Amino acid sequence: MINTVLRLEFEHVFPDEEEQDILFYLKKISSFTLLNIIGFSNTNPQPNFDNFASNLEVREDIIQRVIRFSRENDIREKPRLVSREASLRLAEIILSNRDELIEKNSNDDRDSDEINLFKAFLIINKQVNSKQNLTASEDNLEKLVDMSIAMMFSTSDIGIYENNDLEFGKLIYATITRFEYLIEFLQSNEEYEYLVTDLYSYFAQENLEEVSKQMKYLFGKLLELKVKNGFKFQVDDEDSLSFLNSLASNEIIEDEDFTNLRNYPIYKLDDKTYSIIDFFFVIDKFYKSVKFILKESFHKHHNLPAKDRTFFEFFNTQFSEEFLMKRVLDEIFNKPYFIKKAVIDNQDNEPDYYVRHNNRIFLIENKDILIAKNIKSSGDIEKINAVLKSKFLEVNNKPIGAGQLITSINQIVENDFKFDEYVNTKKNLTVYPILLISDRIFEILGINYRLNQWYLEKVIEKLGDKYNPNFIKSLTIIDIDTLIYWTPHLKKKDTNLREIIDDHLKQMNTRKKINHPDLEEGKIIANKNLTKQIAPISSRFSEYKFPMELLVEKFKDVITE
Image (cartoon, rainbow, N blue to C red; front, side):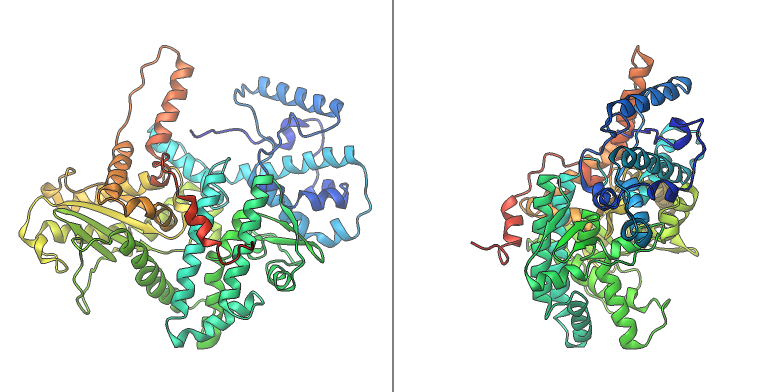
């Protein structure tokens, strides 16, 4: 359920006190406390206003202030002080002012530390709240979708859910799998040797196999820390120290999308002690960040300007689509009776992946795209909607993503599909259009629903009276990590994927009516139902039990007796 919980701001708690710049409060905090707050975003649960201060007198004063504010402003939900985004922002500010806040700091007063840290969080919350530019909507569901996307888009890749243990384990397994495929791809062609060399050199290792081993050691440590609810660890091995040092930096600059923290997600406390700034940033270093390491190598090798798009065209087509996507989907659709698209040279409007079983068709477009950080972190629903349309529907009247799926659907309906002659002899084929995405930021509440509404408008306009929702299904959006994670289940039985999609589409397209005598209780039920309706497919299959032996298998080459 979407909880529009109020993030407490300075004026909410200290209305009679003049608010200062955040550094004013951070300078009063000891370096010991500041260093220990780095990585704090990884712990769960995060403290709130009513248990933040250890001094009972200070704690009670804060509680009474918040109660007074809530009563005066009719705030019914318990307000929040600390969020993962606020903790990350605080860590970034501390590290970007390291010399002043850490090196030249002699403060040592625990009570003073806590109240000044409390006030620092309040100031950050005001900045976070100001980014949520929500506009009114005539329809409650549309407003809920707007709110969800605007609130969650900027932080969707640092753990969509507050208790993110399952999401975290899934991401580790999928990232290792992706990285293994990337190594296989880079080693498949001698022309990529320079990319291989630059990649393992970046991580201060002798080859990619060593990078993979060090990555798995680190991921194993993350799993251990996750269980213990910690974020600091020590290392003695020289190769591991070199590897970890490549992930750490003393030079951090504040950025609206935590760019520097993503590049350097580990902080070096001393020669052998490290703090994880953010678990999810560490994992993403081995896919999202690797893409940019390879981009720099590619540009240097080909002497290309910084804004040239050649690398992304190469990577998105040669690896994401023709290698990664194909390997994953071929493992799922591995039976000989599955009909794949015919290979035709120089043919326009070719679907990225096509598979048919009898009269059911899965039509898939792969999208490995980037969203500009100023849009991603804006909290502006109008800007986000505009970029979603340009990335997934059409740009300059040219269909892309869902638009390309509509083109293929129209060809199938008109019996003019060049990639499977069988469908040109049949009517009433069932088509499942799927957008396969590489970035999990699109697996948040509302994205699939919103894109499906745009897709339905276009496909109905295109097909006219030939559109039949019983045969032309709604749009499904699924990320590659979810497919990798579900693969053991999906390849067991032909109908497994279809059943998950059918259930997802049924829930997405069904609006439940609420008739409850208690208005407030009715609102809560309605919110739960609407939230369920706009949920991503990745959250539908909650009963799935991932075979943990497959995760253990990933670590077999680094597990010591």
